[in-house]
Image 1 (cartoon, rainbow, N blue to C red):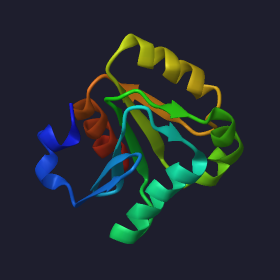
Image 2 (image 1 turned 45 degrees about the vertical axis):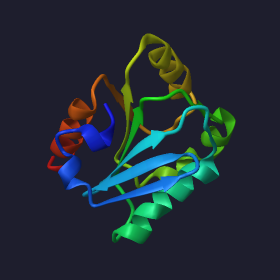
Image 3 (image 1 turned 135 degrees about the horizontal axis):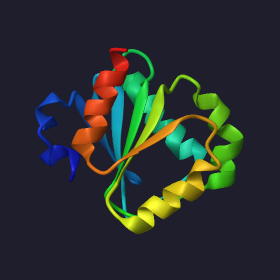
Image 4 (image 1 turned 90 degrees about the horizontal axis):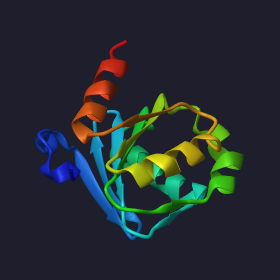
Length: 134
């Protein structure tokens, strides 16, 4: 489900569209919808995080990757730079199919911070909201 069609679409503070995808800002989270075929490097990922700093005060605590489309991640780049993302409380992934689940399992070996997977965007946002209150 796209973020703009979700039950919490009215809560979106800002949306930024870039060449690599659309990014929705709600409270202390970014919901990313990377475009089909995008290749994500640490610099591109960091640019997205900086958008939160520009549109709101401070960096996000939660990053939700709403994986509607297929895209690739530069795993070696992320591995060498993920230590710079310690401010993230969690990196949350919404996966809609078996192939994406297998890709996520592979990616998990390259990330040095916690990632959590959900099957629906609603579940992911609900979990983030519960996490930020604990």
